View (spheres, rainbow, N blue to C red):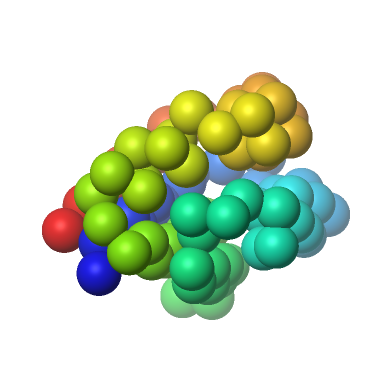
Length: 94
């Protein structure tokens, strides 16, 4: 199992923007064969250390993750759509 975690900092973390981002990220479910598990969460603590939204994705292998990363749906319907909303992100892969 290969796990990919991303934490996102949103430029304007309004309730509406966070809901839109959550729905966009969740839309990957069922649209990318390599993606085996997807969890999306919105931060509720709002501390100085907090990021606004995060995803946990799981794949059968690192190679499946690499295929997901360049998958047309992931690139065109998710990355390009959420990009303008983001201030930054951090990842962890294991």
